[in-house]
Structure formats: C-alpha cells, structure tokens
Image (cartoon, rainbow over all chains, first blue to last red):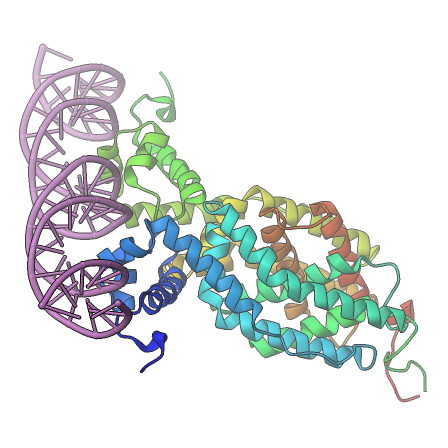
Length: 213
Length: 213
DNA sequence: TCTGCATGCAAGTGGTTACTTGCAGCGAGT
DNA sequence: ACTCGCTGCAAGTAACCACTTGCATGCAGA
C-alpha cells in the first residue's frame, strides 16, 4: 500500500503544483498580467481544476502568498555566531547572503514592489512576515555588538538596519536592470558593507587604518 | 488674432493632454493594465483620437517616456553651492530633496521597478537619463569634498553614491507601503545621512590616514 | 464661401479575460 | 460491483481589450 501523497489524483498535489506555478507566473508576468489559463498550463493542470480548488483568481493569489511566506520562514540567512567579534566580516556575510537571495527572487521582488498599491494587504504581509524576522535578528546582532562596544550609541539601529537592507535592495534593482556602470553586484555589496561598517562603528575604536606611523 | 497654441483644436494640445493622462494612468494602474480607453477618458479625449495621434498603444508609451525624461531634465534638485564646506548639511539637503521627489513620483517609480522586465528599454532609458545626471553631479560634489580633504580616499565614489541613492529609494518603497515601524520618512532620511556621512568622511577629521610614517 | 484639418461619435472586428456548465473517465475504499 | 471524489475536456458566457471604419461637426485660413 502506498502513502496517501503518492496517489495519482491526490488533490493536495494538484493544489501544490498550481500554487507553485502561480508563484512562477506572478514573478514572470506580474500579478495582474498573470492569467488563470497560463497558470494552469504551467502547472500541467486543466484550467477548470484551478477554479475548483480556489474559487477564483484572488483565492489562488491569497493561498500562493501564504505559501510563499511559509516557505521563506523555513529558510535561514545562515548566521548563528555571535556578532561581537569581527563585526565587519559578519556584516559582509549577511549582506552577501541577503543580496544573493534578493537576486534569486528578483522577478518576484519586482512584482511585489510594482503592485504594492493594487494589493496592499499582500505586499504588507510579504514584507512584514518575510523580511521582518531577518531584520529583527540583524538588529539583535548589532545590539550585541553595541554592548561589546563596537557600535556607536547614537544611532537608531532599527532604522540603520532598514537603511542597510534598503541599500542592498535598491542596488539589486538597478544592477539587475543593467543600469550599473562598470561595477558588479559583488563590488556593490563590498562598498555597502564598507560604508555601513564605517558608519556605525565606534569612531575612535577599532580598525581605522592607523594615522601617523 | 490669437497665438497658435490657444486655438481650440490645436493638435499639440490634445497630444500633450493624452501624454500627461497616460503618465498618470501608468503610475496608477501600471504599464500593462493601463488601457487606451481609460487614458483617453482621463485626457477628456475620444479614444479614436488617441490612435490617430500615436499609431498604437506602444507608440503612446514611447512618447510618454520621452516626455517624462524631458520634463525631469528641466528640474533641479536645487544645490549649486560648493560642497567643500559643511558636507553633512549638503548631504542632508540633497537627500531630503531626492527623497521628496521620489515620494512625489512614488507610483511611477513602482510601476517602472515592477515592469522593468517587460519594458527593459524604457526602464533603462528612464533610469539612465533621469537619475544619472543627478548622480553625476552628486559624484562631482563628493569629489570636490574629497579634494578638500573631507572624504576618504579609499572608497569608490560612484558606487558609494549609488548606495546612498539606493538607500533612499529602498526606504521610500518600504515606508510608502506602510511597512515602516515607528519612524517617519524624515527620521529615515536623517539616519541615512548620518550613516553615509560617517561612512565616507575621513575618520576623526584628521586630514589623511595613510599608514606608514 | 469654400476647403482642409482635428476631432467626436457610433458601430464593429477579432482576440482574450475570468469564470461556468455538463459530461465522461478513472482510481480508491466499501 | 458500486459509489465517491478528483480530474479532464468541450463548449459557452459576458465582459473587456486594442484597434478600425465611416460619417458628421466645427474651427480655421484662403
């Protein structure tokens, strides 16, 4: 006897395929240009089946968004060490990881940015439920670094982190649109890290290249 | 006798009204959701007239983009002083001005970000022809400040400026989507300026920081 | 007054959209 | 064997899309 999930006509499988196809089409064609016909085709499923699972187009959109948020929640940027030592290197790792993820999901990011007005609830959910946890951990790490004396006291870390991630987001949007002139994504991330580190680090302190020999 | 432009059926007036209506609808509904019917209605003009002026939808789009770039070229961020004195204050003025303009054109910015894939030529034109001149002047100002000893030597100013404007862009996108938590746009800009200034200024205000004595 | 041109209006074309209906096949549990 | 749930398929609906055609109107310059 086979497990339930391997049955040929298992509804949850069809459902999953539709949702994943929808996310692909949303990213490629945009939320409003994405048609039920194309999504069903992409899922290898009859269009009618789409309407039988999700009552209408909006129902599919909602479910797909829920699915996306959940699947993102299971991912990690992959930094667990304390940030009290070697702050700059940790920043670099974080920035590289986040930038990479954004590039990977570039099309979807563009879609959400572009249609945030027409689907404000979904846009808010996506931003708050996917990027917020990442940002929260980032803030905590910086607070630890501040406690260790590596970070300036007179900066709002919430906003600073927002600025840092925005720097990466904005750069990604321009670079992937082929509008960067003479530098790569890696170059860009490196400068971002450099600038941000110099911006938040305690002034007199750490790795300032020594003036005067 | 009246001047030519005040005639009632002056074609250039109709044309202008259509283009400006188109830009409004593009911003509000997106490039691909914007219909000729709605644009003509918004312009107070018969739909057929639209097709008589611009052969098709794409023709109108191209002309509207040209118009947008031109009208932006006539605007100034409004800083003409040398940046050699009071660098931080000049940064603040620049950032406030640019952020304000972005908020003003928020909907259009979102549309272009979201549809950059489906209209790459127009997206590139918009970015390169409208934001590049602003960025170029910014780089020149920073170079002047560097020559005066206020700015670190070991930073690629092109990328740094890109990072700064991206910081403002990314923040605007989040804040106007009501995804900022407990801070305003002004707060955000202030922190950006603070961070960026601390990031590019020569450390400690001491002139040079070359190692080797 | 006549002519040309820009526009409005009514109607229509062929294509696409979201969404529905009715029917038939097929695998699985009973 | 029989039913039940999931699916595919063919067809259709009403709305909307970009775009066209033909004709009437009205303003201008000659």
